[in-house]
Image (tube, rainbow, N blue to C red):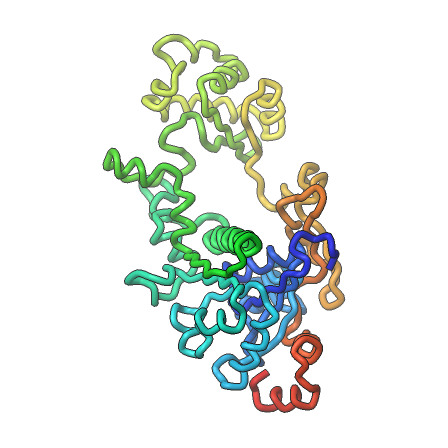
Amino acid sequence: MNSSSPLSGVRVLDVATMLAAPFCATFLGEFGAEVIKLEVPGQGDGFRRFGTQSAAGSYNWLNENRNKKSVTLDLRTPQGQEIFRGLIAHCDILVENFRPGTLEKWNLGYDELKRIKPELILVSVTAYGQTGPRRDRPGFARLAHAFAGFAHTTGEAEGPPLMPGALSLGDYVTGMYATMGALVAYIARSRFGFGQAVDVSLYESMFRVMDEMVSVYASKGFVRGRMGAEVSNVVPHSHYPTADGKWVAIACSTDRMFERLAEAMGRVDLLERGAFATMQLRLAKRDELNGLIAAWTRSFDRDALVAHAIAHDVPVAEVYDVADIFADEHFRARRTFVEYKDSRVGTVVGPNVFPKLSVTPGAVHSLGPDLGQHNREIYTDLLGIPPQRLDELVAQGVI
């Protein structure tokens, strides 16, 4: 790992499974932290088997657990718990997603771990948080979408609540909030000298990104419903069809933006008094205006429509599928997705590290590791467990 990486010298112990919490650890690893991924012996993280499979596990596993070192350990055994305490002494951040109380059941709660490492930062990711009447319930992204009010607002007005196109959106959002919590706690530790616990829930992560929904309900009693591609307070701000069977997104958030759209349409009459000149007028005649815009967009193929709109400084974008993304020059120019070489599976194409730092950028050095690949490196080289003793622990199923 490059010594100039911003998190070089930070060691993270990732004992979480699936996506939200491990995504936090992955981000830290991309920016220089050494990440030790602890998994159940003989079984490993279920994310290895989640999704389309490669010769070395799912592509989800390869992409979302990159730059990690895999060790195996059974925390349900006294020997495993003792080894875990030894690992904690060498780590700065612990990332976990057990149900509340699980670590305490194994005598590995935060109070116990702080006695070993007072400056330890514990990042706990759960469905509903460490407190409250639902704290013991299991959860996944779909349940968080539902409980946070996100699913209720997703879909067509007369249809059922729908999932977003990214099935695991709640996991990724939660992983980002967990990362922010870990980094803020690490900054606090560098300033004040103490560690702390970071409590992150799936539902609160999604709840936090629901813009004005809470304030408007509290003030006006308005319950936001489903509007398909529309938004409640802006028109036009939707998806529109083109002649070649594709779609574009147009977003005119101000009157001036709409003026440019009307000019691009050759319909400056839409700006006359009493027509669509103001947002209030456009909101009152949403369906009529969207019909006019859709009729106009259908007169162009997608690429021609986008070029024409851009020439008039209209906010527009193509509605892409993944094949479009692979062909797009902007994605390639910014290396938004890149090829990684892996001796087990050959070339894997995945998302590049993000965000992009100008002086200390992140990097990917390896894809998701094999189960227990780094047992000897961590247990013998770091903890000093003799190879013979390590073999005994493996035979006993502890490692």
